[in-house]
Figure 1 (cartoon, rainbow, N blue to C red):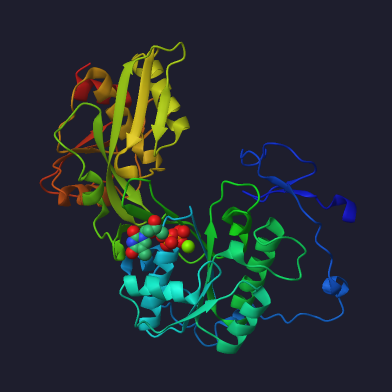
Figure 2 (cartoon, rainbow, N blue to C red):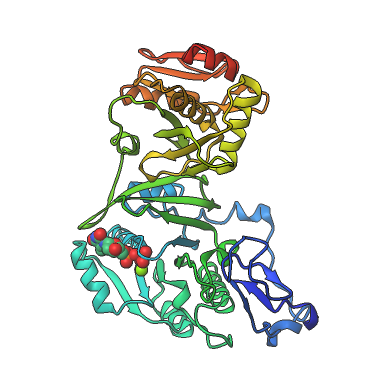
Length: 454
Ligand code: TYD
Ligand code: MG
């Protein structure tokens, strides 16, 4: 048994390896594999069969009292990402790069929940209570009824939680916590897992919701949040581009709501402000109609969001032309270029292609294919698309356009922002959207012919 215990673990993704390697096969990160002390079996390991655990009939559950309702913070962008508020006794992980604003977001969330009557304890392992208070004062939250703690010892934290029984405990950050039952340094994979396990089981046992903050790390010595993603109910990532003020809170896993839901915030001098109309923000940088720009009517979670896709196509001085992508999947670009070449006879050999989603947004929907193709063609032909046009549709390998979900919502959002024509796949379920001219197209060849007259 002991022999099969893997002795090496990737600190970025948690994959187990039998021997050390420079690069992790599972996630591709370099220098993240570290040796780990094997976990001891512990005193409880032989208790199987000694005492029967309590089970309950599923049908009995219905007769028990209804679960307490979700707690609403009043910060709409946050409540929506949570799936409509915070579920009692749930465990959440909020990951993000250092300095992106996790502590700021969670302090604001703690204050908002506390003001709505939820008992909140904010435990910081990185800052002294006085520093947290200073930050709170800067955010205008000095009078919020939040309890603060500055502690890193897990046993002390659990004792405090047990005594105080807050409805919500925020642990900032999971990498600073250490448990004396694990024989390795704070921040190691074993420590981070042990701390997460203890806090999550406390949450389930005592009905306290816990929010764990996890720094995304580049360095192999500190474990990243991915190693505990499987232990929690909800995983949120707080993202943003350097040089941009806005931040996106994205649900990548949620047992209690839609995954892929996003909340948009802007970092200001007084903390994070909600952005209630992200489409307007993402399109605000758009100037005059110019070649290489296409507006994609997308859906993020349950909400329509318009983004501008920008492309640049230029003769390449290199033998292998460049394909540079920011904010989209690079594999998708290759596929779309291949379809344009093979099905529409438009060659890209000898041409560099650069693709970018304006404003630092990240788009993962296949429905963006048509807008990507349109931006690339517009750049290649040096012909601007009509400025009041939005596009959406998935491109199949045959070049056909596949209908996508929520067509009506996409069109409605576009209409609201002043767009008056749309290109959509044939057989899309469009409602009567007055003032909107919707052109439905069978395939990419028809699209190229109609829009670019080729
Ligand atoms: P922080 O929440 O400490 O990041 P994290 O916990 O993810 O490491 O945020 C740090 C950054 O946010 C820092 O660069 C300063 C900026 N900031 C503001 O711009 N305005 C503010 O009101 C606050 C509190 C921070
Ligand atoms: Mg912090």
